Image (cartoon, rainbow, N blue to C red; front, top):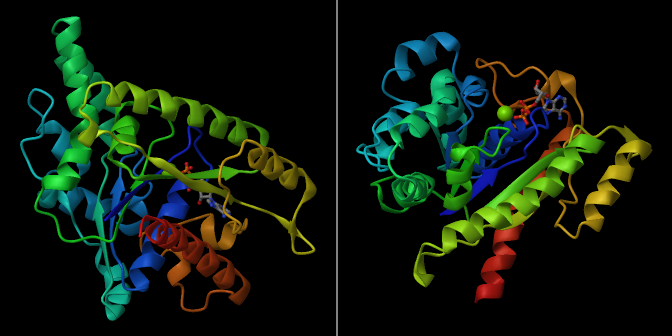
Length: 306
Ligand SMILES: Nc1ncnc2c1ncn2[C@@H]1O[C@H](COP(=O)(O)OP(=O)(O)O)[C@@H](O)[C@H]1O
Ligand SMILES: [Mg+2]
């Protein structure tokens, strides 16, 4: 099982659209995928469920908020297995090759979790630190020990901030995928993220023994919303792509093209673009290439470990 957080400080960089399409295509290829929507904006959830379905079937008992609400002294008292739901329409397509796409939905009121935790953690400074440490590690522990179906990939769509939810996703992850627009503020976000990641990992590892240390690796930066001129990214975007290359971070050679019709207006009744039966062939090639490059990262790693 590979746990991958999809992360950038900045909102509107294409995290959610990338997560939905990556997850759907992996599942179509026969992989078993769990998507976790940790963003209170719940955009990933609403890529797969209508607001009515969410209210009627998920809101009360099957969102990540249900799980966080069950926390006592920094530890969950319910299993992640109880809140997982497979969106039906997508699974009727991806199930044909034995794939599976499960979702842990988000909740619009997840926003208050940070505050709730802060109020619950009113003990002494040391108690607070201990409990924060528990909460940060809780998702990792749950993914490792809860009675879940066997997954090839867990993809976590993070909020555009570095709050406790994001931190728990990072601690749970083997890899971090960083979508970014090729513009000034988004690439600044990438630089900050890199530093913040290192600090968080150090803080966590100080409190655990060697066997429990975490070392999430950056799988790469994926450029999104790229505009092309003569089959190359336009010059202004290429400038920022080069800048990220110079940071020394891995950068995906495949990008997501800017296409408002396909990616700009996701509807719960439609599929992620990658599953559209009449997908434009150029876009299909690009998306397939991106997903293959993603999977290759793990193949290379397996080969290196052998
Ligand atoms: N490749 C793309 N081309 C055009 N619009 C896109 C593309 N990717 C995302 N969008 C749109 O941009 C907005 C932000 O994307 P989203 O994935 O929600 O970003 P984030 O999760 O980082 O906030 C959404 O309205 C989305 O539909
Ligand atoms: Mg999002």
